[in-house]
Image 1 (cartoon, rainbow, N blue to C red):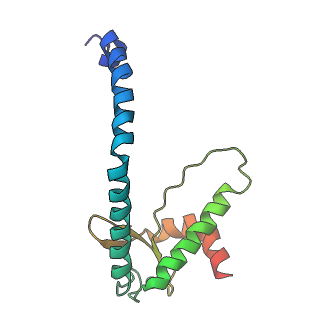
Image 2: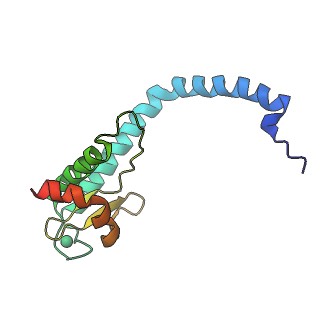
Image 3: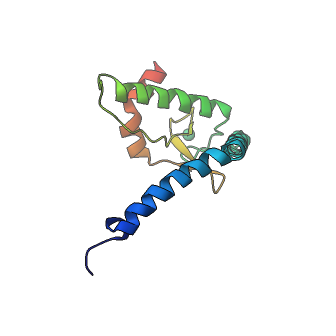
Length: 140
Ligand SMILES: [Zn+2]
């Protein structure tokens, strides 16, 4: 191996100059079609999640999660984000949401697995460690 990649060569630079604007142009031109399709896809996924949570048993205690578990998860995650960003100033953070439902009976966190259309119990220890402050805020 010479250690050179395609992107180190003139061809790579030319490809970048041509491909990047074409990719941006294609993205902009297809946006009127892909935008509504993505929105429709999100709407359907959310509808499927709401239909499933109504009678989904908690992975920890077995109680039915119900729609209130989604609301509670929103509150817990909102409190978690506020805590994470508090006092950080200009520091940039990336927060990935892994909490979709929070059991009202035992505080267990569940993630919605979109591909399997199923709620997956989050690791109890890790969930309680990560969201301890937020859970305390929501309970109060
Ligand atoms: Zn539970």
